[in-house]
Length: 379
Ligand SMILES: [Zn+2]
Image (cartoon, rainbow, N blue to C red; front, side):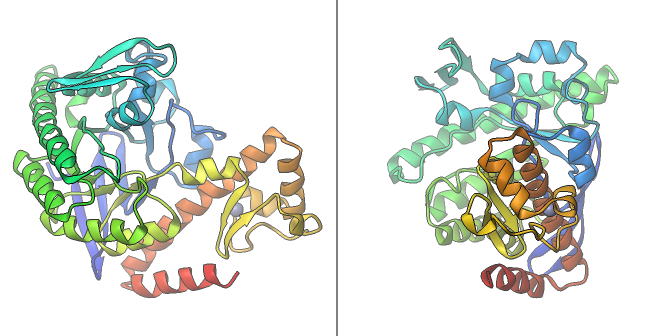
């Protein structure tokens, strides 16, 4: 079955559609983050109204709390959080390496201590897929190891070997489960599995990783382990070096990136999918994205500013409130501040993606990128 359809290109930027069990998604797209099955500050209906096509949830967090068995009992994650659109779940690998206190890396998996209660947990590639299947995810990710940006070549080589081995095991287990599901005529047979390219900041290891994953064969390919502290230029270079080794007819996902600029740079290089905590996390800290750059809403200069946050934005926040009011809410620690800020930032990212898609459609991506960045710089 053809899952990904490439409709048009503008330079290397790609417009397409990705078919999932819970609907078709227009690419390139951005996934708001619903880590624990909740977008911080928004209901799923609000996210949908803002134009969210797909949400990202986190296997590690959901495994620890409430546990995949409870979610399965609830009828799956879609039903549990009242979201009928597609869901992508990561494998939990990144959180194991970034959040848990003690971890022991073994050939067959990783042992770690829950950051919530210290409980010891052993996560294997098979277990990571099994959890994602119980959640009822539409797009699942393989278990990988994400080395920090400063790791030396020897470490990254060893880590990559393990990541490739785990990718193979994830795929074998996934295929077996998918076959079983087809035999049971269950809907779980049309979920997708993505591989994750690693290899640190070494272009040749990235190439090797991409080639090994393509040989195993996945429904889509992610580039992981970027935006982990390296300069932006290095990140763009790694993307450039990786993409030629990924198939044209499969979606490409840049994990955990990034600012509007990063997204534009990555789309220009041929990336189709994004996720990032920035719009939601920054909203809670009063950093608001606008067509004229970042507004730090707590700043004194907005005290008497009775204009909308972004005149070009037609979200609920911008249509109904002034900067002075948003600043007042933020300074007063009102819960409404978090809600209105999040609503705007998510709207801003989703609008950016929709503008990007229109620009590619009209074969004007380069011009769009240039004018977007020039407007931001004017501030
Ligand atoms: Zn707005």
